[in-house]
Length: 326
Length: 203
Image (cartoon, rainbow over all chains, first blue to last red; front, top):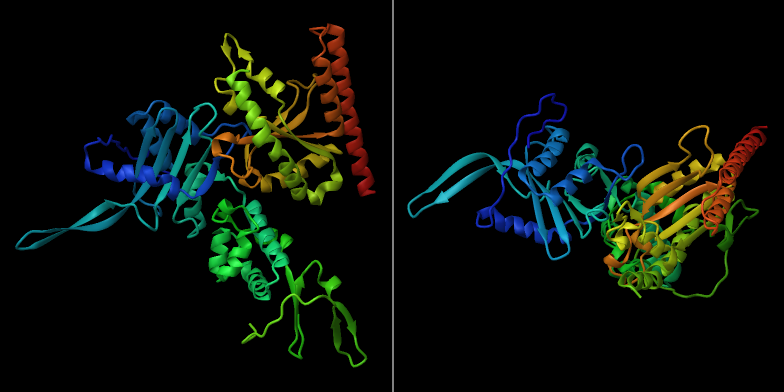
């Protein structure tokens, strides 16, 4: 497929069926089998502009599923060619279809073209040859989508996808999932962000470990830079270096299977649900509490000397010495 | 008991019923900013009787649904009753920040001289957060239906639904006119209340 977005007359392209005995078959079979693990993003086709449950890309995939042929595959490739810019470049599209007695699976993968060198060694010499177009399952630019189901009428609206370039650039990020698949994440950014924020808030409220509270509060304060990026609860924990104990405390507040689920981070939503207010005094004291209840926890007054006094009362649940204050 | 009835009963008890409570709570949490614009919010699993009745529907000679467990999309139905017409859009906007749509439809009469059912219908992806622990992917429907209506749209639809299930059969011409008249009245009441609340807010 050529990068023909905007061209009045797209260049012709050709497809071919890969025979079971041919070399690429083993590689394609591996892609097919690994798709449920590799395609991490739960996606769903978007409705048409008039709001009905109709989607052009979905229609092309269904036509291919119901009648797999070079013709029905070609129109899928033409759709991708029509939205591919020079930036994404030349690519090779694979449509891999499999079925057992009741379920079908379609895997759609795009390999980008890269220059490469073919090296052949014999007993006396090594010969090298420059090859302009090698199509590889690039670790950095691989894109794939997978759909599974039993009923052509009811299934195949939801699927899973992977796009290794998803955070590199808005235009490239939109290319595979939004433009080609005309789909969106099944978990909206706001939903995923809210889930993470409430898990962090609940972890802080439920743990009696001051170190864990402190770690999470620090991560929350640093989270502003994540706006618009694809992350997950596990990605958040790794990015802000949460300890194993703090990570486990967060994990306990959400369904285990959602801990790795990716979503687009929304800063405004995040701070609606989790916010810690901290006050540091010039005598070295630091106070920290949930922003919503800070004023209830700490009573504030101004002394005659012009200094601010905070007071609070409660049972000590943990007390420790820290080597340093972060 | 048919295989379909048995399969749906199992889904109803083990999956749909536990999910509706969580979904209702979720919807309230998402809509807390506009809670004062909502008269009521309900979520229900489709009753087994209602499901089986729908599953038996025919389109000409053929059954309408070849796989009712997968194809009937309102196995979970949610309804938000808003106070006024102007409240519908902001409610929908918030819903769509937390739920991914598969369909967004305005159900309105076919021509401007007709009066009948009116409502905003959304088909939304069921988020994994509300799936019951341990349920398999196959046992959970992909979608739920959300209707957003005003008080008067809701009141008319309820009465109309009740009348359409009366055993007397087809309505007469005059009875149909009466139904259309009440729909027109409900539409008019919605318009006037909406204008009133706009006037009072700006004055």
